[in-house]
Amino acid sequence: MLSFSMPIQKNKITNLAIGCFDGMHLGHFELFKHLDENGAIFIIYKTECNELTPKEFRVNVAKHPLIFCDFLEIKNLNGKEFLTYLKKEFPNLEKIIVGYDFKFGKNREWEAKDIQALCSLKTIIVDEFKIQNQSVHASLIKHLLENGKAKKAREFLGRFYNIRAKIIKGQGIGAKELFATLNLQSKDFFLPKNGVYASLIKIGDKTYNSVSFLGIRSSDNHFSLETHILDENYKNTEEKFVELSFVDYIRANKKFDDLSLLKVQIAKDIIKAKEILRVVDER
Image (cartoon, rainbow, N blue to C red; front, side, top):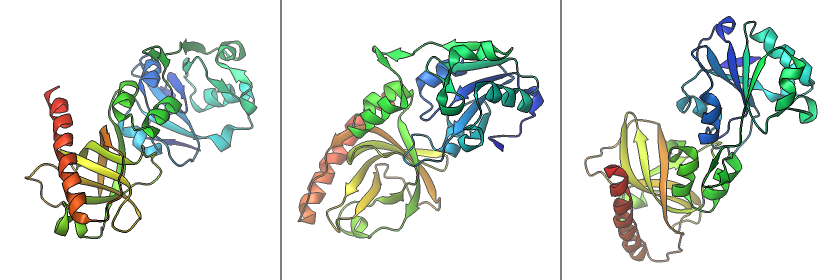
């Protein structure tokens, strides 16, 4: 069973970009450049945790319609059977666009170069895409984020790395004794290295500068993801979900036994975040 990001008449699809497309990074967009007005992005999808762009979130990034295909439905098809399946689902399909490292069919035994030999479809194989002599892959972006290199990851993503999160009830300590924060809970998204970040938070249709913390908090030794909004005009929201973008890493987490010392440190973090975000605003 295929699922679609928007209503689509399958007989109007003439070209497909095919892949897993986690991250929707600049390497993927090299494939999407070959799609025309009758094109769509065909995503072979596995249900996984810790993704850069979980299923529904990909819709926010891509301009073309998305078609999701459950990997379990096609995993036992050989190469020719898979291509026959595509032609049956999309009767007017003429062209397939894939990356140089694309493999398909049972046990991934067939390669991109085999497509045109197995069927009549025109095939465009997009060469390896590099930035600063590094091949752009989701694994590279995850590695950068794991090491707190959010600014560097942006160069390969083409945007700040962002997640969707639910606003949850916190301890109430921040507003009373430190700085007011929104406490957040994120599901399925890959999270970057624990620490303090200059960040942007989108609430409804507005985006605010913020400083965010993720990791084990000093007050109760529990994992926390929270953000302090730097805009003094911000008022409490009734929104339940937000999008949080990690702009740049500020520092590693520290253990504070005294809340007054933590407050001093957060004040320093706020100053640093404002410096970082001022440069972003000026671009």
